[in-house]
Every structure is written in structure tokens, then in C-alpha cells.
Image (cartoon, rainbow, N blue to C red; front, side, top):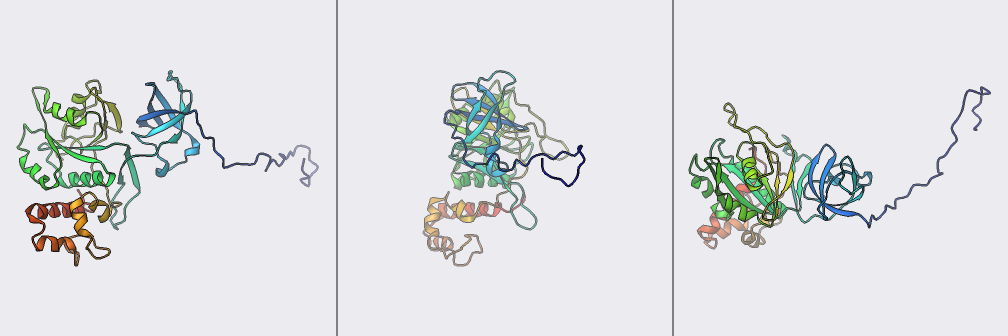
Length: 342
């Protein structure tokens, strides 16, 4: 007992144990960890599928840290320890995350000051982005589609357009907007309760990990239910007043495709902040333009008003041709879409 300056026997002082258990920065390697795929995330609980085919529920270990930089998302490959039996009411612990091959991310918001909000990782390790949009009811939102394209190029993913509700209007005028970008496109419609064109979509997604994105009401959940019959994703209707769809999915979820591969369904998006993507990041997706841009002055933004941009000279002297001029116009439209409201 330390001398506290009083003789009162009722006063007890806890012994000073500081230093009795020195802290260490050495962390266990968890070499015996079981590897699994993250299928879904719900309020701090992670739904996993182990390499052995066992469904697990896990929490993230404290040693992984907190915040966006240490976030575990759908598509991640993780190492887990603890109870990996998959029995009901058991929890495993995620102790490590494998290096990611791709990261689909967006800024939380584009602020009025022009500064990007915090970046948020949406999905990891996907190789294809299926951008779903309706040709009518609700009307297409080209700027949002443009932003999704930018996100795909930034992530190194292959973008694919999927136009739904083709029974309501002709999709050709909308698809012409993306012809110069050479983005593959598919068209679907619902006829007598069946999704026409679903076989083409199924072939495109086979043996790949694909993320489906689109704003609410475009028929994304209907598409997922046709691809994965037992998915049972909720579908909704378009609000007659606002012309926008109601959210039917609240979180991303990875679904195994019957023919092989994974479809990752995401909640309907109404914004897609991309201020973390710079002009040079986007330019890397356009090999022909990137080669010409090597002659641009240092710090060139490649925008229409950029002084001495080599891309303008490329068009002006006829080297680009009609196709190159259209691709440059499309590239600059995507470049502008990074900072525009949808």
C-alpha cells in the first residue's frame, strides 16, 4: 500500500501495476487462418464463404484498426480464426485481408468548396462493372452513367452497359452516346413476366466477378433475380411524383451465379463522387489518347480550354480522324462529369 497521507483504514489505494505487462507491437502471424470470401456486411457482422464451402459469420479483429483505410468490404479475401465451424450462433474473427486486385471506390460527396469528401471503398477484387440504366421510367441519367464509367476506368475494371425496359422506348439514341467509347452494351426488357435478353447478360457475367450499379428503379433487382433465381432481391416501383425509384437494396451482397462467377448487387445510387480521380488517372483508360498526350505541357488538364493541349493539335491537323475526334469528345465529357452534379 502506498502512503496516501491519511491513517483512515477505509482508504485503499490500488497498487501501481504500470509496466508489469509491457506492451508489444509484435502481432501474431495467424498462419493457421482459414481463408474466406466476404459476401455481405451488416452492422459489424461479416457474412463469409470459406474456401471449404462453409458459411461463416465473423467480426473484425481489433488489430486491423478502424476507419475507411482498414475497412473490410464485399469481395475481400480475408483470413479468419476462431470458430470456423459455421454452426449457428458462432463467430469467427477476421484477422487479415489479402491484397486487392481492384478497388471500386467513390468520394462520399462533392462539396460546394470543390474539395472531395472521404473516399469510400464499395467493392474489392471485381473485374467487371455492369452499369444498369433504364431507357424510360425512370428516364436515363447520362451524367451518372458517365461517372460510373469513370469509376470503372479508375478501378481498372471492364465497364458494360445494360439498358433495361427496352419495351418502353428505343434504346438506340441513348447507346449512340457511348459508341465512341466502345463500351459493350446489352439490352433487356420484361415481357410477360420474363426478362428478354437475360441469356446475353448471363454469358457476359459467366466466370467473372461483376458489380451491378445503377440508380433506384432501373430494374437492377429484377435483373439479379433472373440471373440468380434464389436471390429473392426485393423489387420496387418508380415514384410517380419524383420520377425516381425507391431503394430496395440496403447493402451490397455477393451472389454466386449458377453457371460460375459472382454478381455483386449494390444499393441504388443517387450520387457518385469522383473528385479523387485526376485527369491522368482517367487518361490511362484511353491508350490512343494517352500516347498523344505525352506531348502535352506539364500539368495539362486535357480539358477543352487547356492551353497548348496536344490532343487539340492531334484533331486539328487531321491525325485523329473522325473516330479519334469522337473519342476525344467522349473523354472530355467523362472528364467534365467528375465534378458535375447528376
